[in-house]
Image: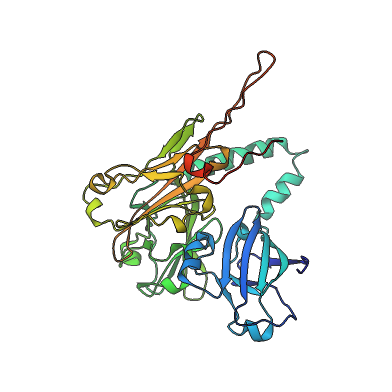
Length: 396
């Protein structure tokens, strides 16, 4: 059994990729298994070697299509992980675990995402002068408040098929101008150039989910359509000349309303997810995952494969009776606790893997509180009969 070692890695904002190092001098045979997981700020499944379809299903959505390892790692002992398009959301502790025969070797890597200083110089000067220029500061606060009020705001319900982020102009823009939409994490949401969309320049998170009008520059309408919105965000549209000069810039605030289910600690809770009547007949697969990328529940035609569920949800979830006929794929979670306080996403697919709907729900379970009145108190505890099978009582 090998001991843990620690390495710290820093990556600058806008970097294309970062390498999380993991190397060993041990001889690795063909049966060696290597797992990359995230331990902080929460546990997540990042990458595994060798890759199988089951491993890809376990991978957290955050890392989908963003990780890779060297193909000759068994010969070189270089088990480093390449993480593409790193952002602040990737900061945290990662563990490289090597399973070799009966030995387990571990190496820990802490990733720090270093953001560029975005605070404007004029604002820094203003803050330094605050003690002497209180009136100016008051004016700056008013201007900041006014700025927020003038930024277009678009509200949409989670589960909506699409939303349009408006950006129209009266300016005459050249035909070879480049239009780029980015979110507040600096991820590229969409690129339009030379009269066509450029999907190869998009961040993976937005691929297949955005579109602009074919004659956007001619029509002076640079609005962006975003499919299946799930999270609120500031999105910025910037127009560049062929030489890279900024010609135009605008911002849109997207607010996605996520329904919150508040559970007072009852036997079960239902997370809503209902498809439109015209779509219910096309559904072949429905997947529920939590905000940590864990498989909560999956319906695949007439199958309910429990082995793909994260173990804490087994025997704890079920869909509504008659869901195939009604299109109501709301999920029931039995005996919820504050450990279940997370965001949950419902994804419905047709047979060609096209997404029919994507909806996000927030669950908040109130803590169980017991008041003591007298010489004794009963602490409530409920579970399912399935979980009690094979258990033994432990007295503490």
